[in-house]
Image 1 (tube, one colour):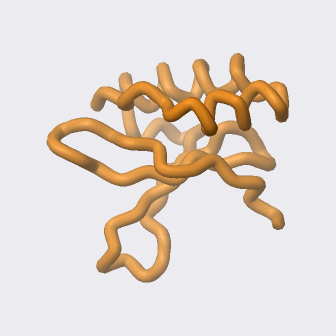
Image 2 (cartoon, rainbow, N blue to C red; image 1 turned 90 degrees about the horizontal axis):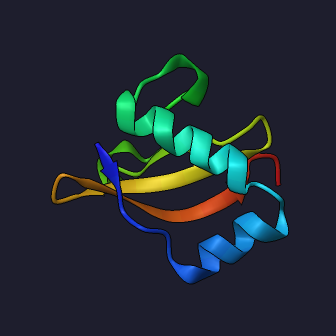
Length: 81
């Protein structure tokens, strides 16, 4: 499953929080196997909205949707805020 290129604001967020390498590793794992155990991929509530997340590291998650056989990251969040 291919992940679309990130928006500029998300690229800046990754850089600000020094997550570029971790995101690239998570992206590679996701594109090979969206349900790789270390990603902890899950559907978010309410489930009918079909919004998902995967783990970048223990603190940060990428929130995404499926669009036309691609994945679009809609935001990157601090999981504990």
